[in-house]
Image (tube, rainbow, N blue to C red; front, side):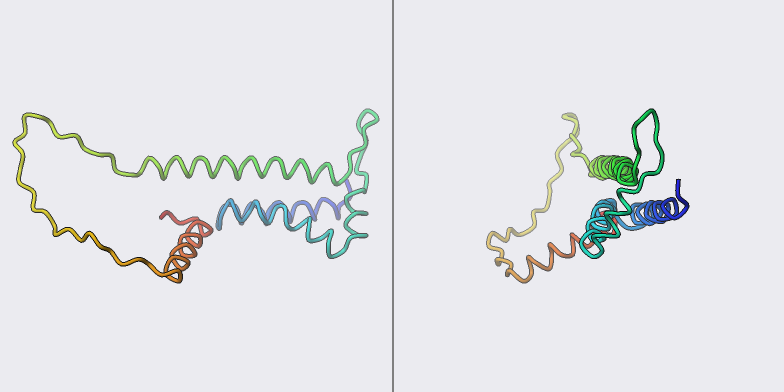
Length: 144
């Protein structure tokens, strides 16, 4: 394989994996797809020439850089998807479960807080700010 192609793919994979580990799997998936698409839009002739470059042949089947890119995409998207599923499962299992009281325990009087039946509606600005804050937490990989 050409050393330039190897270096380009190596840098691409390391950058994606660093984003996946340190920032967010969702952002890593976006960068994974957007970098080749942006390179085709910005430098179409050079990028298409790079993707069409043949690396080797195996049993009459020609392997080009595009095939290697698709292999990298499938592997990293599988890692990102499994990371999202595992993190969702772990966050879901951290929620406190409802404790069921045993029937033999005497009921203790519970002081009731004053009910506030009418809460003021949030403005659109506050709702948008809350959504953006939650999105920022998701993209940074923090638990909510």
